[in-house]
Image (cartoon, rainbow, N blue to C red; front, top):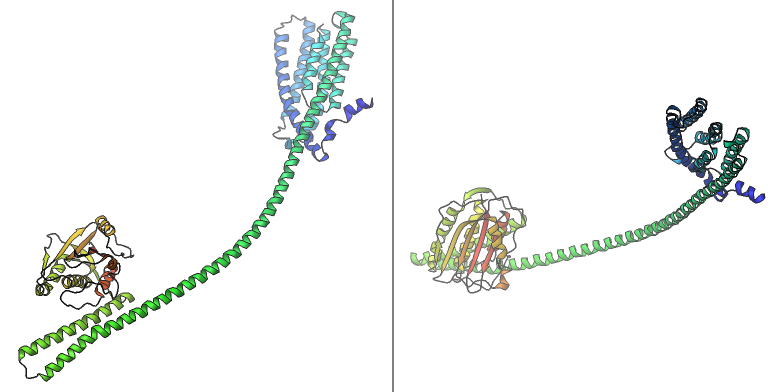
Length: 528
């Protein structure tokens, strides 16, 4: 007796922790209400169909009295099912969290309805001499599909069984056979007991599934908490690591700053050394290149003074030498001033559009006497088309003057100098510049958007320039192994000035040369 009481009262719900029991009953109520919806719809449709088939069409050939009893029974069950359906559907459920006291009361009244309602059906079947056992089995099997606490389920099923037995005793049983009545008692009792056990085990299975699910959730939560703690520990360690890394970065930054400062000091030191070297070179040039012309001027002036009675032809020759020496000194001073103004950015450039060809022709004519003195032929054939450039005219004249002066200076007697002006597209210019093994570094200034370049080429037949000397060709105070062939004067500043002027005007300049095959100096200026 104690074991039986424990079976029905101490169900497996106690295996669920107290904190989860409310949630469990909410889930059970939610599942049962959803099942009841389907069952009530099915019951209402079945009752309406029975009214039409059994009572309206009278397919069972019932007598008028039996038909009236069955119709009353069908209408009662249809009304009961419809009323419960309205009560169940008036508050729809979407999740277990929607379950309220209302739905729990609905399930309680539904259980009472399942016990009371089928009694009318059993009565109608018995009175009309039908067999109630099959209907009884269908009703209790239908009810057992719900997940209800074993005590409630057992009480409802036993009350249904008691109602069946009471009506079998009170009303005339089918056929009035005592043996058949005994079989009905035993069959209904066996079905009831079997369904009570089945319902109990199903409920306990639902409880166990819920308990295991919650155990898994707790384990997951515990793992999540451990992961959170580990994450916090990792975060703390990462914070410490970041702090250490930050301090290391500060130290590295300070080391970088110290290195930058050292580099700057080294660069400044190198610049000071370079300036000192340039100063020494400048002093050397001034002391050498100015001393000789000044000495020559003084000597010639003394000769002119002491030889005052000399002939006019002798005085004219001395005067010519004085003018030549003065021009050498003036050229050196002008070059020094130009270099200084270019480096300080003080030189003014007036950019304008003009045709380059006439300017080249004028410069060529100026150097014809100097070339003729060395039996050098300057070849220049102006193009028919105009070659307009966007540049500073005075600077271009100085550039052309320097290039032609060098070509004549460094060409041996009896050789040729070739001058050419032609248009060059941007791509061709870049290709020539990149492919030339002797090209110098180009200007870093932004190039204007042009339709290309106008190229000036000055080619001589001199000794050429050795490869090892081509890298310093456009430097200041450069003294190469090549020397002027007629003893002409050279300051070593001309090509440096040319390069700086060309770059300021967004052009390019370079040299292509092979030792023993002469040299070609190329200047490209933006085409207007």
